[in-house]
Image (cartoon, rainbow, N blue to C red; front, side, top):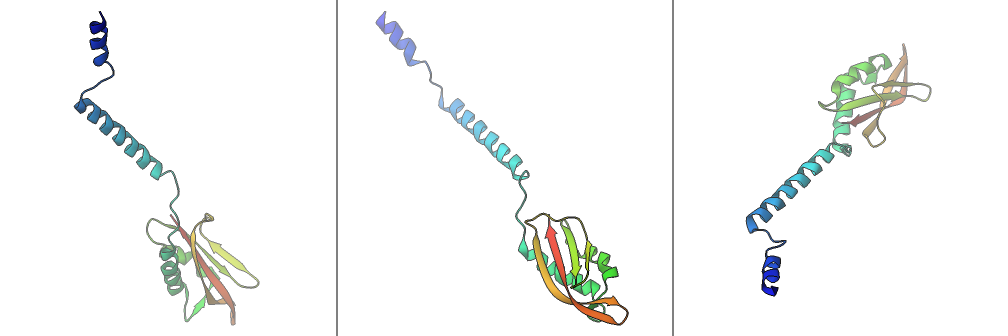
Length: 134
């Protein structure tokens, strides 16, 4: 009787190598699928290399004879890279103009001093700031 019990225990809890390998592959594939689904759940860090070229394109689009007119600020939206959102802020000591949606706190940004025409014949120093994010 002892032999019968012993032989029945030898087969318990064991599996062949192929089913064990298949189960390991299934678990690995499930983890990979789960990890890839989480990838889109977290925001991507801002790419600072995008803000500076966007600022340059915005200045090129807005500055006529080196002077930016606040009324033309909406034209800068076309300079945002494909797949990115952008906000453009033109500020002087007395005024501030903004075009674009609210930006997240971790968005990439770049700023440059520009000449701003605030009235006919009146040009003051201001700053153009571009904020870019996905």
